[in-house]
Image 1: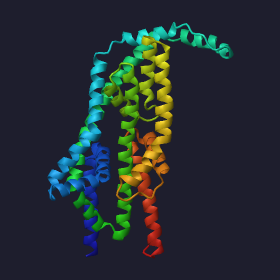
Image 2: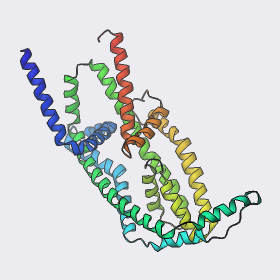
Image 3: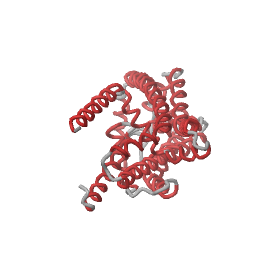
Image 4: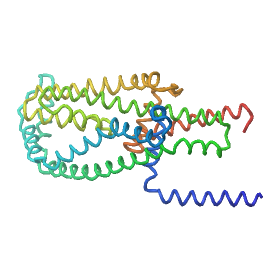
Length: 347
């Protein structure tokens, strides 16, 4: 009997290893889709109630909802950017940089000592080299953007199946994991709550920042919807964020319409969006979501979730915004479960 049990465990481990090898190229996509399904389980539950328990239709509705609210803006932005880059006139970059390079400026009296250094720096700018680099970045963006769109399409597919079969899988895992059901439920509940906070806050903050930027550039005649969508997407990019959008727009505005409008866009973006909205308001939004939109508020501090999002982005790139908090939550919840089980003398 014992030998048969050992054989069965080894056989299961071999099959599991083969399964992981089979899907090794999609593991990250599957993990992201699964975490998103966990984060939106309350939405799927509501659709299950509306469809009177029809899991297939509920999964379709949940997936459609996520595509519209989360993925559609990404698709729209990436497609519009690809169109823009395809028809982009590279001479605009040369014109803008040439205008900046030859611009005659005067500094306040107390900063006169900086003027020669600034002029020397501007004179050293190699327009041809910058134009070539811009073309390389555009080409790289097109390639990475295509891969990103493919990943998002795959996430949608796996997200649908995670909603369709997720409940049965969780029930099965609970039955085979040698841990008390209540403690295991607490861990899974905590992970689900944190994932919901992360996902909802990410979407709301991106929309909020994109709206703020769209309003200011629309005032100067730009396409506010497109620029707002681009800014919302870029705000999620590690390290640089919205600076990828507002710095080029400010430089182009400076070369096209003068210094005043360029300074307004630049200062507004740095102060109102990057500092006030991103640094001060973002933790408050996370806290509000934790209290109002999540069924059971997470016990993990909102600032810690925010730091985990930043660390995740630094370690894993864009999708680290979801992976970082998930790893942190699993760690903290596992430690809590260990302490509880030790107090009950179950381990």
